[in-house]
Length: 58
Figure 1 (cartoon, rainbow, N blue to C red):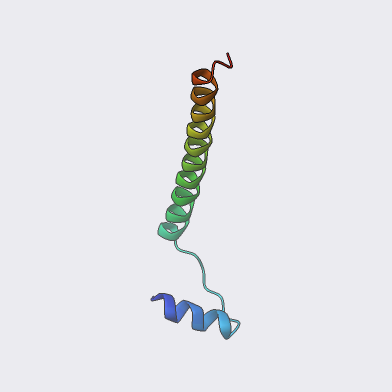
Figure 2 (cartoon, rainbow, N blue to C red):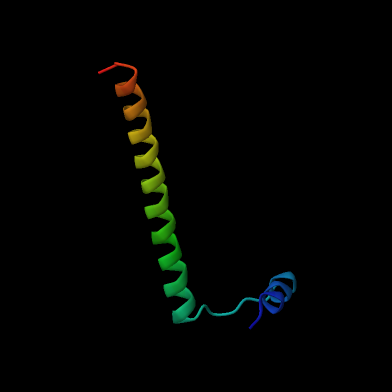
């Protein structure tokens, strides 16, 4: 089922059952998004720490 067909179904008020593959895909994407967010936060924290160290703040 294409994205266009899914959008048409939503506009028509129809729903369909989510397949196991779609559930797995959605769960995997959520996990990856969480991991990416944690990594970005860690990188920012390390950058701030390194800048503070270079300025003699420690």
